[in-house]
Length: 181
Image 1: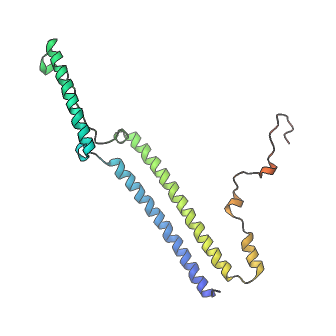
Image 2: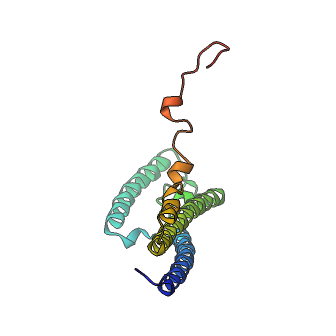
Image 3: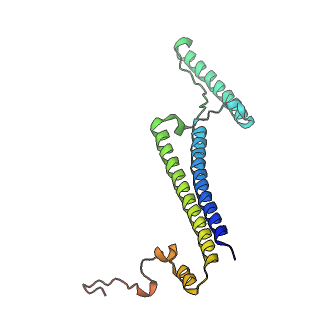
């Protein structure tokens, strides 16, 4: 059996652990948001990847060939080269969502909401684990059956918030008359 002093030391350690883990959860949220911002702000060059570079080379060859056809047709119908339409190839360094300000704002809100939910879930898990540790610690120091019975009688979250508000045995089908039950 633990001494009272040992239990008090462990209680302080558990409270400190909870505080540090919650700070770590806030820090992790900040890191996730920064990572999201970095991903959204990333620019990509066509030649930084072999597959992209080859695709760009092949596309340029097709565009150049089509440009020659357009140029030849313009000459046939009498359009001078300096006024002739041109076909070009361009590479966008960012995705479509990154180009539009409203969409970036929406993506930021979505990311922030998801990160906040993850942080809140982590904090609840931290609190539950620390509470469980404190309960075990307290139970280790209990000497009477009445005290142990009190701890065991405390309701769990499942008891406090069941999936269905009414037990299945008490759920009755709704009837179409005024006398529902």
